[in-house]
Amino acid sequence: MDTVKIIAFLFSFFLAGCQEPAMQSCDQKNFRYRFPKHFPQVVLPEDNLPNDCRILLGRKLFYDTRLSQDQILSCGSCHNLNMAFTDGEKTSKGFHQNSTQRNAPTLFNLAFAPYYLSEGGVKTLELQALAPLLDSLEMKGNPKGISPLLLNDPIIQELSQKAYGRPLDYYVITRALACFQRSMISADTHFDHAYYYKDQPWDSAAFRGWQLFQSNKLHCSECHKPPLFTDYNFYNIGLKNNNDLGKERESYNIQDRGKFKTPTLRNIELTPPYMHDGSVATLEEVIEFYNQGGHNHPENQDPRIKPLHLTAQEKSDLILFLESLTDWNAVQYERFLPLEQQQ
Ligand code: HEC
Ligand code: HEC
Image (tube, rainbow, N blue to C red):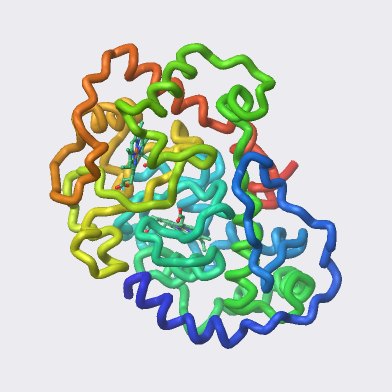
């Protein structure tokens, strides 16, 4: 089943459980995510306000292989913290090593995204979790039921009661995973310190790269718009066609063929290979791709993607700028790791 169908299938079930559950303990009125001041405001869903229990349950489930049919995969199998929650594969390997169609994206700073997946077809993080949980190419969970191994786990059940006041079901699983994922924030980079916090001097090559990045010649920052380095819009940038319709899959509009959501460039150094299909191996190759004005030239290619005639120095400055977007602290935070790995 493809993702869109699965979501439609489960949507009625999902809504059926949508009354606000009676809250028990663990409801910390004062809980706040550590959202950076220079990031956009987030409106948190009323029916899933965060607290420590919800985040803890989400964190446990994120690393729990019992959510997948073969008990081998967890969310963390394809979203590894040290790679900014990606997996280093061209396209992710899911159930029985089946290749999925796409490259695993970073999960940092998703709280600020207006929709999810490269065609933007999923509106909330709560709903998004159903896609990998049930997709036959990814975790291949059973939509009719949750594994008895999980249901009979007293610690999970106790946390579920504390967090949502009800036994573990997809209502709880999807919401707890969303609470945990909203806590995955990353804004502690050389760029943030030099440009926003102004408590570090700019590295001069990275600064030159940043100026090029914003220039009228390159236009990078128009699509990769700071502070999140995405405008959440969809473009065809002229990658070789690989049968992935992109945004057209969701809109059924042929003009949208091969358009994909602008990805964030935060932590880009840690997330090769690149593009929705992992077809570009390194940052050097990405810059070469843009320098050539794309690989093939479909009719709906964005006009800003055109030959750039960059010098060797400009290419290297751009890469140093992109590397200034790495948050070496966030990729080591213990609160994002499996509990067992916390010291
Ligand atoms: C088999 C590997 C695999 C597993 C397991 C997996 N994912 Fe993913 N994830 C991916 C891939 C590939 C994509 C990109 C899909 C797309 O764009 O269509 C993705 C996309 C996402 C996105 C959307 C990000 C964005 O920028 O829109 C979120 C959120 C996400 N995954 C969370 C999870 C959660 C939560 C779990 C566990 C329930 C999980 N993933 C399990 C591979 C995986
Ligand atoms: C017209 C909008 C647009 C412009 C201009 C643009 N990009 Fe992109 N960029 C995108 C989109 C859309 C993708 C994802 C394409 C895909 O996955 O198929 C992308 C992908 C990338 C990636 C890979 C991200 C990943 O996680 O795989 C990098 C790096 C990147 N762009 C850097 C740049 C640089 C540097 C410039 C300026 C030379 C630039 N972009 C200009 C829209 C744009």
